[in-house]
Length: 116
Image (cartoon, rainbow, N blue to C red; front, top):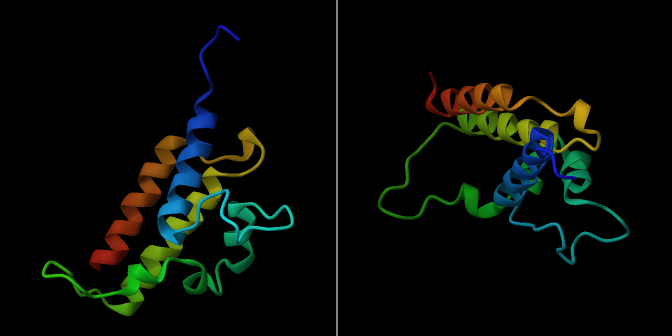
């Protein structure tokens, strides 16, 4: 009230945004029932069945500018991004990853994708 909003709230929102982008599911989606949050929905399948949770459109190779990445590179990148989103969206603010570490983890995911 009247003070600066904590950065942890922005980190949480960013994590939820990443989950929305990579799953194609929004927090109020009808597929989320019985009090299951978007975060919990993804966390249940992580890491083993994460490909079943993400939006299948991420796996399509349509379009003139579609790039081909190895399955291993793509999977590693995907796991890193989802893990980052889950760490950002932890329930307690003090358990959330710092924004500087978010940047590091997403850069690492990019390097995995590119095979660097």
